[in-house]
Length: 212
Image 1 (cartoon, rainbow, N blue to C red):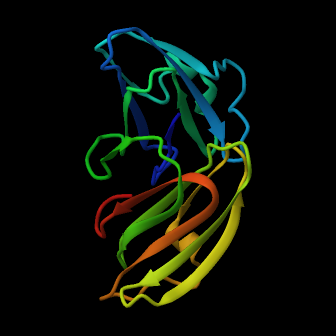
Image 2 (cartoon, rainbow, N blue to C red):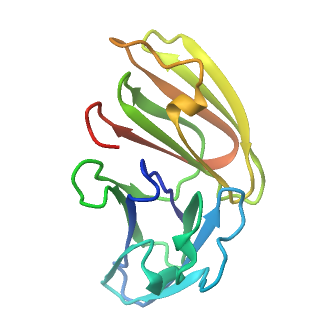
């Protein structure tokens, strides 16, 4: 499976776009599921969840998550959530993009491989910048997570622990994760993540002075 986080600095205004390419010779069936942070499927009036898409050979699907041809009107009032893509085709290529409505400042994209991690490093913690951290747990078991904020010298500044429910997620600003404070100006650091079950870890960094 492949997993798409929802790292949006302004969740009510910014957009998430998903792209999936089928380089193979046969039609691929894609199943996209929008899942709440607590692990339940997003539901509500006018919902189609999961959404099913037929992707012909050699073509690409590129949609905003809010496109009603995918999930209907389900995401209009949804809170924190993420998307899981399942397909029998192992050769699919996927990409996601987050951006402000006018595609000016916070335009960020990344390839999605679906690889689950027990350990990860989120680099480049820069004082003055805005950081979003996203953890997605695609597994059917609860993931116990430990996050350590480490400065440039290698010293551990803070350690926080928590759990992510099966099929759940966590998306937070870094100052929410580490309330005791980030490294001082003129220095930097990184976050080391470890988990009891394979998770996907993401980071969005918006430099100081950019709109968020």
